[in-house]
Image 1: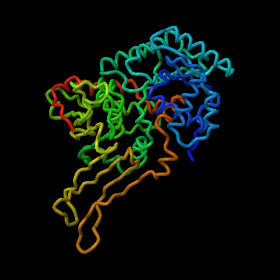
Image 2: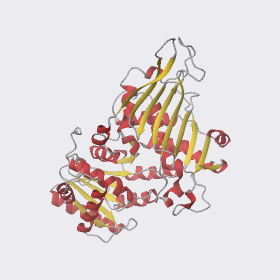
Image 3: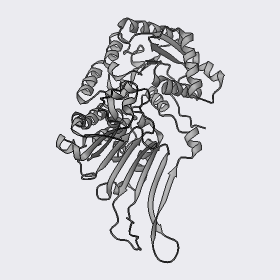
Length: 465
């Protein structure tokens, strides 16, 4: 059983712009349905789909029904039918202001039906290139203003990547700052919402064992890996314009770095935690063009150029490896190795902390042995924490051997307790908790580190694997 958290019961309408897309089908609809089934959504909840399809409410509900059946294997038909009653459809084109006016009228009718002004949550499940256009239309049509004045709210959920480089991210952020308040903006990096990643904060700052040695004096290096066994699948257009570094490096990988290396926020608040993450990202040492060849590498998996919508002349990386450094007192000269790729041998996301080798030992050492403690945060597919210790080997003599001390979420917990990241994203957005969403400072600091690498990628050799 999942632990029930007191949820916000304020009537809320969830509007998905781009409701027929892949993200909606794989993540958003299953997450919303699970939250509804577990009574984690407000009782007066409505879902509005916005798309250019020639649909009415019934066609939309058929789409939702088939999506739920496809992605959630064990569920009751009565639960699905109950969920579908809360849904409506609004036809619309993103570039036509008239359809936003029609959406506004649909939302006002919902408020009349519900009997109260509902909060509005807009999820932009669209390609990032459409963000600017949609933001402007939402604001110009009045949809960004809460209908309940001080009593209600309107929020926007934005997917990564937020911008294409530092300049575009700053421009987009400036636009958002004119149209919305910071507390209305929820920039999604769903990796932050993974419970196993959140556990890093609990492990580091709730135990006295490691924080005193969490620095350059004791740690030799940190490795952060995000490997995926699958390729780009049907995302050729998107991936060719994005590449691995933009796709997961600027967001997921750097957020893992921030959690592993940030200072103690000292309190459990969105403001303190987001500031601590931003501060460490600001301290990342910029890699200039002269250093890039020795500190970064990129590659493309064999067969990538045969994928749909990928040109034969493609120079887009599907793998990268970067040796990063943080220029502050705690982490000076400690290499932080960032690595991610598609079509790898296995799915693996982890953070591995290598402590320095102990120079002496009251023991007999083998030729290949190095007395290093290694701490591993397993994010996925395993979920847990593992520490390599050294202990005496049984038998005569006094030889040591490595032993693992581990904490794993049991398989039952993985299946029955750990929320899908998007369930947590939606739930926290409704509550107004921005802890697991990236701030303006974090986005800008990430792009400030990544953009010089992107600008000089062409000077590094693109290999294949």
